[in-house]
Image (cartoon, rainbow, N blue to C red; front, top):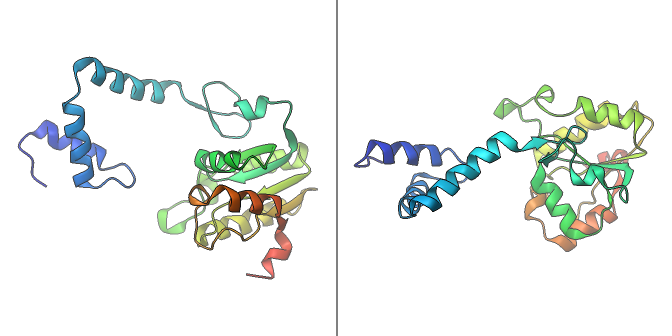
Length: 205
């Protein structure tokens, strides 16, 4: 797509690097920003700058936070002996929206995917093993029911097997191939509530 301004072209190229945003969508977003007044545009740019400079990852679970620890890790009313392993913040939000889970979380930061060049060393796994060894009774593997999610689940199961913890996985009410963030709250809530032993789930794969 050739545009009449190199500055417009550059902005469109930057927006099109975002997931799910093609060249046409990027152009529409950039043109929308151009119609904003200076104060609105400055606020938009400032929010991105604050996002980059101030957002942190929780030192305990890897969740996104403004402080050293996230609100869930600081909440004494939650069951911190149960850790639910997820890929990112979107999965935490999806599970929290069900209102059925009151434990802690551990954010991996993705899943194992050789095709994308993502290996175990690229994920937040070592801190999960340390937490499992010292801080919890149960680890729930709640990754997306995709090939990459199943591969990561199995890898984590092998790593956690030597720890003295119960290892469970969400029930297969979530359709195969679905990401948790797109699963309806009732189905996801039931999948968490009816979780099963991960070892028994291997026999059904």
